[in-house]
Amino acid sequence: MLLIPIGLAGVVLFSSAATRPPRASPKCAAEAMPTVRGLHLYAPGTRASYAGNLAGFLVDLHDAKATFNFCGGMMFQLALSDKLHSHLSAVSSRGASDAQQPVLHDAGKRRMQQLAGYDKTGAADNARVFHGREVRQVHSAAGGMGMVLQLSLAGEEEDAEGWTKKELSGYDGWGHDSSRKWNLAREADAFRAKWGAQAVTLQHRFYLHVDAQDNLWLSAEDGCEGYLAAAPPARPKVFGLF
Image (cartoon, rainbow, N blue to C red; front, top):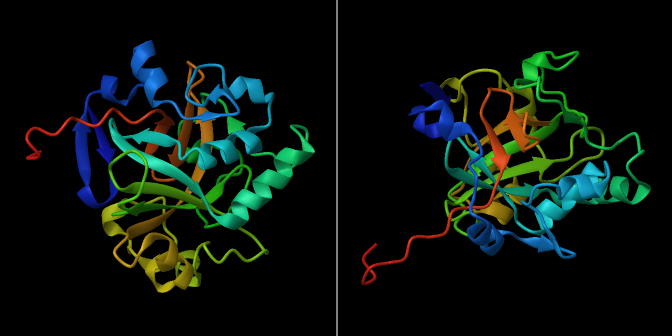
């Protein structure tokens, strides 16, 4: 069994099989897949059709409100801040060879601590490592669970939706969520305007990697991670009771 940390809930037990991307039936997968320019974004091989332009793929995932499956069934919608969306769109327009293209790490990099030059800081470069947040209690979130993973622009160019000064100065995302200070982003007008004053949030650093089957994973510094996947179909209500 694996111990999987999942933020507010602390720790949940899952079997190792529950953390692997399942084989969806072609019919169900096709029904759930968002499309961009006719491409099914969750379909095997779609990312390869971008020919190394990962910036363009991330922008399309955002535009399609694509989801990542964390901890064996927690569906988070990927959301880019406006600034990061603009940045990645510009990188995409310059092509796959642009030096600012996001880095897709190999299957051997299952933890951020395995990345070359890793250090316990809050630094991010918008390519190898990103600033982000888990945001909960967002009723409009794709995936049906009210959860969003927001990535924002780090660095000198100010991002109104990016990390606040307190999020930066107090960052300790290598530790367990239960020991960290939540909801610092609520102090920012841009955060409340986008997600609402009720949203529960915690900042993390994220990076991208693949597994042995070439599935795309978005991983936080504390080891929580999710793979790109369609949300399961909603269960039909029975007489409006459930």
